[in-house]
Image 1 (cartoon, helix red, strand yellow):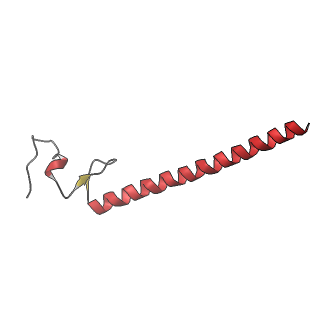
Image 2 (cartoon, helix red, strand yellow; image 1 turned 30 degrees about the horizontal axis):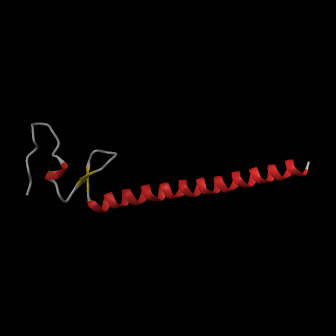
Image 3 (tube, rainbow, N blue to C red; image 1 turned 90 degrees about the horizontal axis):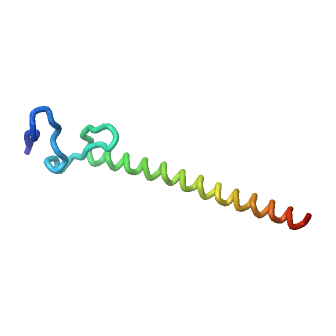
Length: 74
């Protein structure tokens, strides 16, 4: 069932379109499957950043411990 826009020239509101959702970046209608792909891509991106941050933390702890041991030996 197609609903008319609220006013002339305005886009339909999301609650009027239960099977479709607005794309967060492009302001266009996308299917739920496409929205799922976008969410999975965002999660993958944040997972890569989290893994990078974890390795950086381990590396910095290793460097800090190495410097501290060298200072204690001198």
